[in-house]
Image (cartoon, rainbow, N blue to C red; front, side, top):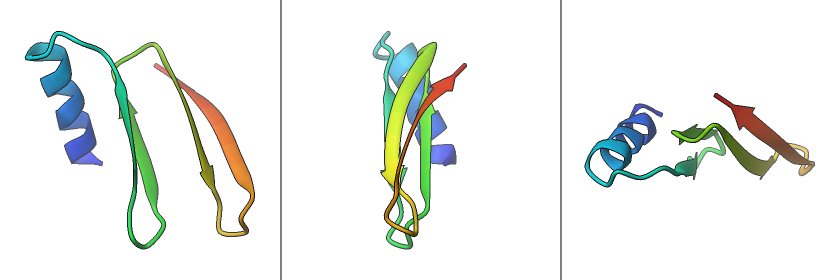
Length: 57
């Protein structure tokens, strides 16, 4: 997760841009980072149910 936030800093500072990244580990853990006001993301939980959310901030 730390690498995701670091990549957002690089994008903002060097690239002068905004965006987000969603990552999933081989074990099924997920994480996300963004430098935009909001970011939509979705994943399937351990039961296979789709979870869709909007992160704010």
